[in-house]
Amino acid sequence: MTRFIFSVLGCWLLIAQVAVAGQPAPDKAPPAAPSQEVLEKEFAETMSGATLAGRFTLLDASGEQPLKEDRYTLGKVAKLKNGFWSFETRIQYADHDVKLPLALQVKWAGDTPMITLTDVAIPGLGTFTARVLVYRGHYAGTWSGGDHGGHLFGKIVKEK
Picture (tube, rainbow, N blue to C red):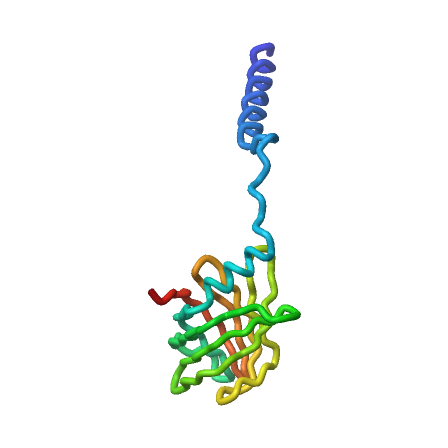
């Protein structure tokens, strides 16, 4: 019986040591998060002169259709007031190829920017709502335009 008690105590001590060893050292603080100013500067640098090259899904009354290609070629991207950003764009998908400036709202989830549109009329294309996250060279989100919508995703490619 004594051996059993010592065995159980030994197991508990071993488990406690493993649990404590897995914890970060209390004297090491996590790295400081970049300031909002730094995040915004990085976003502008990442997006300016880049191409968002990817695919989108189309969900409509007939159901989901196969993936289709889209490209968003960007010129200068710069912060405006009240959370809005100026995007010089060329939007290409299906038989559409439109070049125009857009003022789009960008919201932040911690260090992740999200481009938002809510019922925004885009000349030559229609009225759209979208939420697009941008992170580490990729983008992903949802979009809708009237009676259809879907998902979009791809890579952010910088021109050399």
